[in-house]
Image 1: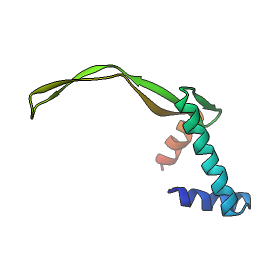
Image 2 (image 1 turned 90 degrees about the horizontal axis):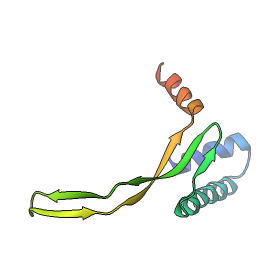
Image 3 (image 1 turned 60 degrees about the vertical axis):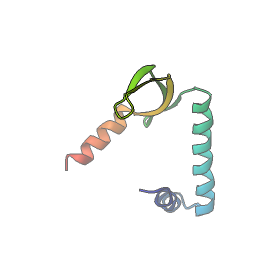
Image 4 (image 1 turned 120 degrees about the horizontal axis):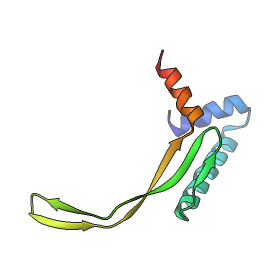
Length: 95
């Protein structure tokens, strides 16, 4: 499903105009980006958690140039589904 498909589906189920739904979806995505940018987590009960995970500093080796490069620590956005969402997806996949 694309963002356009999501907006169309939400518009049908809520009876709101697609432009209003688009603004809501855009606002939600912007809020998620800003919150994760502040390194804060977002918990949506029954849906999941958007959070920042950290990759450790490591040493990488470029076999072509024979160079060793130090890769710094990075913050990586991640989504962890709730148990309810996981169970729903497993149920759908079982058929």
